[in-house]
Image (cartoon, rainbow, N blue to C red; front, side, top):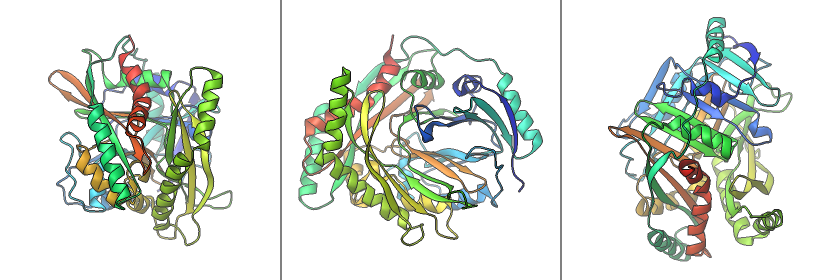
Length: 446
């Protein structure tokens, strides 16, 4: 397959372009925000030439299906972005049951895998303020360029949600107490336990309205949007799951593997001084550093399954990154993909994300299954997989799953906390509330 065709066009905001197509089946976007290397590129995709929906009872191998949809590796345009066409979609949390069979119940509304294959897309370069229309052929690139001519659609103002309800605080704190007891009994070291929020969008509001509001209120580097028939996903995730990218200047092929697990949270302060104090408290916290390090070790083990021996390193530990409502402790783990291994192998080796399961992963997942209903999109991954072998994915935290019914759109969202031996149930519950705050503000702003 030949390298992609690139056509440069004047800048437009990616969410404005998405607005014209957001209600189409299989419209998809990766809406990078904030600052830093992870926030340079956004992508808007539509009109896939193939789609895949893999239900929980479908016996086919999901990773073989991903490999088959991608086909033979293609070249990339040297002046293009990391993603120049390929697959994009959702790997739900319960996809992990196909890797380590635990008999997980499936979510009533969400399949294990939802994937489209996109031969054309728009790439938005936030650094150079340009848009690239990209296609596997010149005609496909030219067609993608015409998407920029569609007029914007204004987002719905005012309150977007009604009947917003949180699961019981007392029940959550009891669950935390149980997990702490299991940790003291030696069953595992850490488990990520979540609370559930549900509600409905107001009549006339749609999933894109929430996505647009989140971009404006609390930009995140791994925000995303996916619309499929009867379903939608709106994510404001700050966390990378796993990626495959170029190996230095002389690497030639895309071989570097990276994961950036988040563990450790503090709310933002009301004043500059209070905010700085909370960030300093986070980085100095032995509990949070230990919690983060446990997941770093887990992710190092996951990456070592598909990386060259001795190639997995940890170039950065315990970096504080600040977002609209919280400070997070973030570490970076890197490796070099072993010869013959692909992004599909990496996804299979590392899924579901260790930062939102626990350590050891399998034992933590068993506790999650006892204490929570099926997660569906939450703590799964929104990903793209390039025709050339490149790959990137987010951890689906700060995420709403929406389902269309006869009365409009109903939704659910969750927020969790990593429970360790010295966790305080009330403090962990308050952490979930800090994490969900940006979503609730976007939903309920008058």
